[in-house]
Length: 486
Ligand SMILES: Nc1ncnc2c1ncn2[C@@H]1O[C@H](COP(=O)(O)OP(=O)(O)OP(=O)(O)O)[C@@H](O)[C@H]1O
Ligand SMILES: [Mg+2]
Image 1: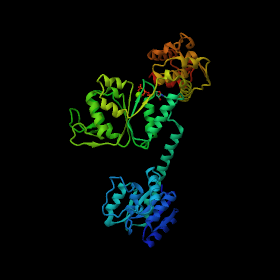
Image 2: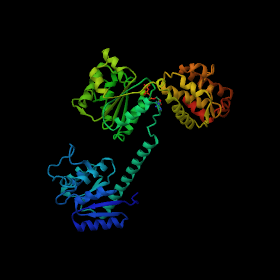
Image 3: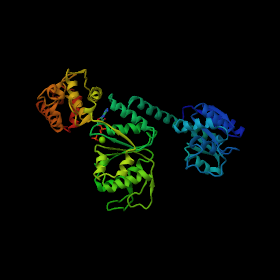
Image 4: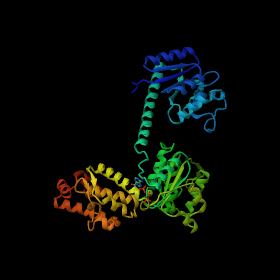
């Protein structure tokens, strides 16, 4: 575990100690840069990356804690930094530019792991340093072996963090627009607005019919924001009984109501530092509308039955398929709340108003489901695409995806047929615009029946049933699981 080597910046005003520690670390294979001067340290940190910073707390002029504070937290505007005893940070005295750069890197999570060395008398500053994000501390006097172990662990930690950052950036590239497909003017506008709002912490209101991709856009905003490593908590306001929703959102203390046997955190508290996605916001009762308004205004709330107020720092993304403006005029939705939510509106038009998005969406879903079910799909039968483009898609993208998923599975060979798209097969899609698709439940019934009958005729032998239907065994297993036919 402690096998790998790293680059270490060593800061101690006592030359002799500095040299001794440097020698030991070098002997362990690490690359060491030493300095007795904290300001020089800041400059070095701005110039090149280090894996670990080992810093002595007791230095004249600038303490190790000052240096760390400068490095991690910045000198102004942070309320969590309190230490009246210490001198003003070094960077305020002439190192502004490099300190700024170092601080920005630390904020992006790119800085080194910090290990502080401290004497017994100043253990409190070590704890303060830990609060500021230092990795560990060593209490003087310590054995060289202790130093090597702590540095080794800091390096492991740093390596994990680098890998994590790499994975995040990979994910960013992979889903360039976070899986939001669309080339219509409207969707390009939606994507651009989502990208821009991701950089802020503003409240967002996403509107659109069912299945237009509201949740997808909400996730994209979170995944692109600076808070993307913090939680994204989803609450479906329509799915939770009214009586439970308040405690779900704000939490409760033990004994707050019958059945509240423990204290429970609410979704707002869980989302602290990240994003809360309030889906189906149009279904909130007037009482909860008022409570939500207060959170949006004051950024604080009280858990049910609690005496104290809790503060939260969350971005709110709300979504609805209802016309909230209309609800405001009908006195069914509080006007103040509407304006608090509607800071950045993103409206996703129904698919029938952006039919040019249908071909790239079909392409995307064919690939996705071919891969998932193990089918090989070469092309789509002539005429099918234009039929898909003419249909009105009342269930929007979700309905399109379900249709394609089914077609991928039910097409007999590597060509997606009109018959597979229109499962019931009574009419060709060209002439009727997929009338049968309007009743999704019918289709699921047909699918289940087809599979059940095939299994019957094959006396339960899956391989044969799959052959009868002209689908792969893998596709069959997928459908057996979907319909719980196993
Ligand atoms: N532009 C798009 N590109 C790719 N996939 C999409 C797009 N829009 C929607 N989808 C997919 O369609 C499905 C429905 O999307 P989503 O759940 O985001 O819709 P919604 O607007 O939240 O619907 P509802 O109002 O019913 O909750 C999801 O599987 C989503 O991934
Ligand atoms: Mg949704």
